[in-house]
Image 1 (cartoon, rainbow, N blue to C red):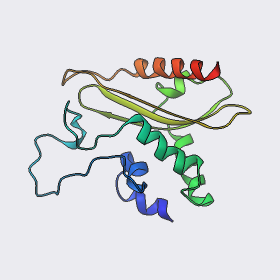
Image 2: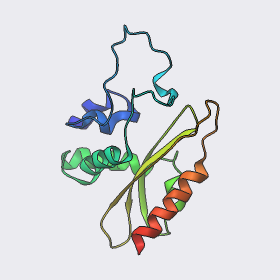
Image 3: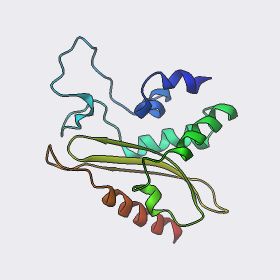
Length: 159
């Protein structure tokens, strides 16, 4: 039941929180005065920072690999496949017939991220992570940018 224990952390960090080597930087204690909310995604702020590779490595371990027992892995994959917040992101780029399970994220500075497991018909699962941000504090997230990046990644994988 490791998965259920990890969910107590935070939904957006469930994969990193369960990792033997967390994908995020350590957070300051609650008594520390923070200059901005953790989700502000301010340039240069290393709190809650990760990389596409770290997210993909963790997702692969938990959703495809054996880091979880079969029952817990099935629960996680069910949640990922049932997600609807990514319909305009990686899911929008996936060819017909592929199955997708994803987890989206957003923050300040137009940050928009999506992490997904793709199951192409007759092929092994593919883990894809796309992270984007913009330079202006009040910038809007660009879902089409993430979807286009996914198109390019999938086209490269199909070659």
